[in-house]
Length: 69
Image (tube, rainbow, N blue to C red; front, side, top):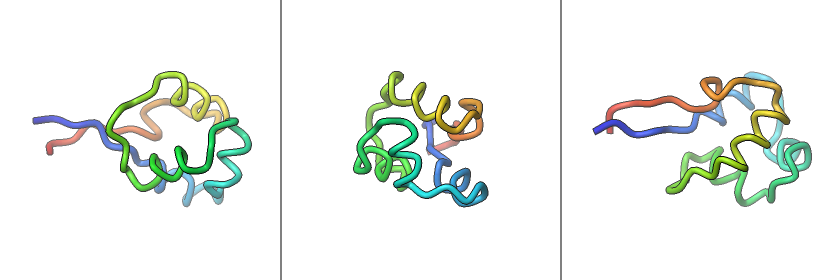
């Protein structure tokens, strides 16, 4: 079965952006960003994804991948 996985950790680390900084830029609470960072998300929120992509000025494929479970 295919699953969607966040690769936000890799993106933030490679661009020198902290979770706290992204939280402030995107206007999303730190615990939510931390969940995405640790790939501990069970429900994707389109609104939050849009805010993260806008804050990072990136594409959806930069922070999400589809992989085998």
